[in-house]
Length: 329
Image 1 (cartoon, rainbow, N blue to C red):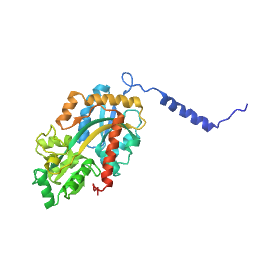
Image 2 (cartoon, rainbow, N blue to C red):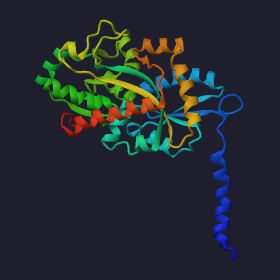
Image 3 (cartoon, one colour):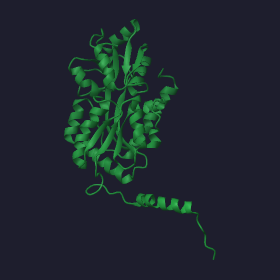
Image 4 (tube, rainbow, N blue to C red):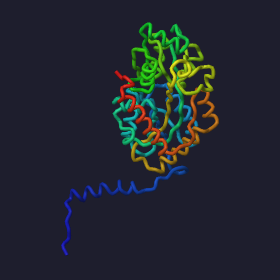
């Protein structure tokens, strides 16, 4: 019988691959004595004070207690989430680097600002919250309602801010323009926190922004709220009309935030994180804090259900963009 001989290079490569193959077969241990054994980092693609940052910091505190390890919020703003999502996609799939995903990250991907393929390079963990937006204006704007805003926009040039080209608030304002029959100039910023500074100062006249960011600014008089973008009024602003009832029938815009992991993260880790984050989101103190800012914790959902949400969001905005309803330039 003839013995088959292997070259030294093949032998060396095979030996090098054995530890990796063995490691891949090891059972992932979660909970006591297992994951996590060190701090967990959550990448947030927007600056401190933004909606996703405020939300994640509220969750991180409670999640730290449940996991028994620190959950660290790492802000990586810029390019409508492109930086944070790319870092997450390149991270080891070991459960120690996660990233928030928002509806505006999805629209930015459709427009090319985010180059990471969210569906292929990252994997869903859980949908966390949903919320409407506020249509806000600088306090000095001579319009106190949606109807007055439309009349003003038809009479003189107005400028609106967004948290970035391709963001949901950018597309949402373009949809508002189309449905209201008005023209306004768009100025993109690197995050909602930065855009709100210029709306407050009057450098730009108005914006659609998330409720988490805008609520304290509206209540302190630094911003003027004109309407809420959901189909129904919200607990945080019971006297504030919806855009639809205030002058643009049929208009609706909502946001959501969820949590992602790098692709190929082991299923047991995803399931463990899904359970712990869902329990955190539905803790009474977390739900109360979110409700006070106009947001709602989503009912517990599976990673597969969150993947479906992402797919539906992509289909919705892609259809509007291709139909030319939304002008992005």
